[in-house]
Length: 436
Image 1 (cartoon, rainbow, N blue to C red):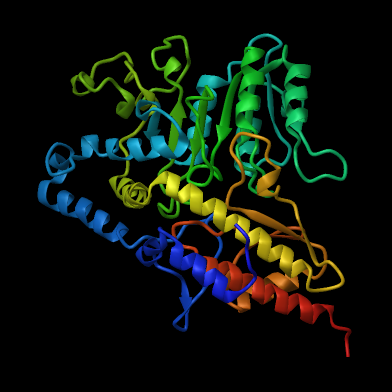
Image 2: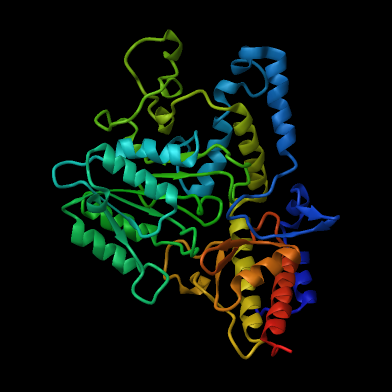
């Protein structure tokens, strides 16, 4: 498509948008009656209006049946989670029985480490990216210490080359080959939280498996954002949160994917819990943990139905919109954002920003780009960010000099992208003017 840098063109794109009705199903933050431009779907998705309805249903069941709500009512609580597996299977590219909804992201990562980090003899190293999100770093560190290992010796990090911001796929593959006799686990963030880089998951899995190494991913910034095919790529396991692109509320219930080839593996270590016990005999309360022969067998505790309800409400909108439609709009939205910001950069003789996120057309294969774009501010970065906030742009500042933005297809518009660019152009033009 041939883009134009004009308000009228942006409005044309919005008018042709088959998903435009979904914006009205979200609560858009407003100050003094003026809707803000919310570009932080990568941090906390907006609240959908149907969440209250789903919460009320749970409260009504609780009030009407008490504990019997686990067995009575339109959606009995014992099976409530099943409603979420099918939509999630489309979003992450898995079979429904390979998914379970439970806990939060870091808790689930620790549980997966119990099963998939199995150090034996000299095979005890973990390969990951440098500057992973702190939760992942702390998870690796504490598991290493739990086994009595020195984290500095056990954790192998792949980092960008000197003078670069992104990790090259070939460097990950080289690191796997170099350390293959000592690696117990390969684990990366599918989308890096800081740069927005989407890794080539399929290639990483192939290399890890060729060396006989388990391979998993943190999908915190991937689930609900990029297209995934976890089962097809034979990813061993993955975990994600639901409060970013999946819009399920702060601290929303997390998700886990475990490839079906592990569901009947009795040699795979795991922590057992009441909710993961064989359903047919769960209420006999007998000794000896017998896991459900699906991903549900990794569940521990009785879930929060209130968190379930928020998650279901958000996923209902994904189902209604259609994952393929959301992916198509996301591609168009991010491409238009790139076009607009390139136009902004042309407005001054001196360059005020560069981009550390790979451009959508730079991906050779795999997943393509996501919704996030990280702007590296070359001058006056914090001043620009603060002024954006004053002008109604809700974005994200990351030290030392990056502004992250992520327009998403369910509730952001092309007009918002254009208005954001227009505000940036005005600000940078002013900053470029000689003082006095």
